[in-house]
Length: 481
Image (tube, one colour):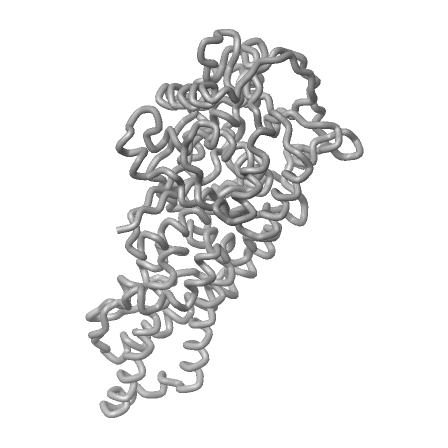
């Protein structure tokens, strides 16, 4: 049994989760479920970035102790995952003492390699990104490209720095050779282009004054806290035992796949490998970079008031409906849009009139003709070749297109054969049952193919059609009016 260790990005918990978090959770869960079906031993990890300055500021604004604030919001992210039927094997909090000691261990290994030094620094800091920016990296207004409209802070203080420039050539070669593979290719090229411009050493600490004494203390310096990206990225290791459980760590590390959004590519493809190289630790094998979701054609923004929570949608329509829309209608490699109108059209066309109608009409024919099923659910290995290549490259939308082609093909075949006309005589019913043998086999195969994507629906289909008696049940997806 091969191991497969997959991680989501570690979300900031300064606010409630939005539909972009749902997208990443669902994508990661789909990959994890697929590998489990293939027979791999899988570990899916997420966590909470508790130590960010934005958490401190948000907690102060609400008048809540920081620990209470991050705990409450972390629970919201965990709650979202459960509502989406996303099963995290590990949820590692950044404020966990185990994570603190693990991150200090990573710092000490880098320091031992003489890659950490202290100096006075002045720079422009984006709290949203938790990153210092050079002026050339900002837009024409001097604002962060990821957080337009938010003024950058000018910070002047003593910081510890990491010798990032030292690892420029090595990281470039690792990415160019695909030893650290980045999917898709355009994001790989983006990283290589950034590295070619020349890497500069980066600040990896902040003063206690600015951090409000929150976060992971720098080893042997009570006046400094570890920079959030140095510690947050290490959640991928602390969550599987780095610094606390060597046996578990050796089993799972390195990560087989990091799933991230495009806005944090630099941290994962440059900073993180550099820290690990410095510490003498193994590097992750692959990074899958997805794009963003817009709402009604606009980027989500608190200012615009269009930050969309997925919770009401899940509670109204069910987890699988949300999973289907985000996996089938949002390309992993291009920004995709969500609107109520698009959502309802997709629901009715693909789920209610497509899959749901097919299942209902075949079940009704079985019930009317007293059909007794002798076909067991299809084995996954016999069916998954239909979308194997697409799913291994994280093209979820194309994989689901292949499944819906199976649905449409069966629907067309049923319309052509008109089996509902064969229920009048025993001879006709016998002929009908031969048709139903094939229909049931195809529907069971479709149910098997849906397991990584729509787990609840796949289970309902299998339960309804495994027999021996097959009867009509409540519609899988009642049509919206």
